[in-house]
Image 1 (cartoon, one colour):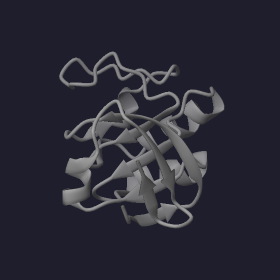
Image 2 (cartoon, one colour):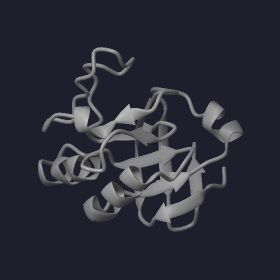
Image 3 (cartoon, one colour):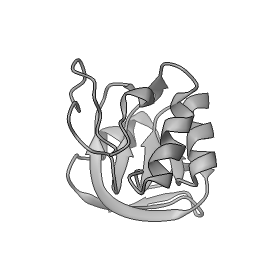
Image 4 (cartoon, one colour):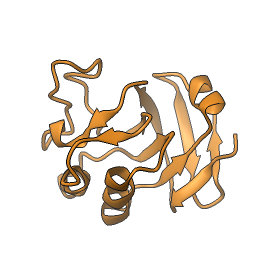
Length: 126
């Protein structure tokens, strides 16, 4: 499927998906989301293709993505619906491929499947 490339790169991995926004500040150094109110609470984004609509919360969340990269616990790639400032800047400083897809394509991506994100070509490959 075609998508809009925001941060270039290529990565693959198992999808970790939520239809709810994520507060990236709630990710600990191991990449585990610590947000009791979120469906992904207790799950790790490390080495996954993280799929979510957009980030919420403080812009400091961008540094959380960078910190995850430093600790080798960052997502391999991110797919979102809206390229918000937190996600875009975090992916840019952490060198995480980022693409934006349509709502129709977002709905087609299923949790737990393996996919590739080619942000150089603007493609998501199943």
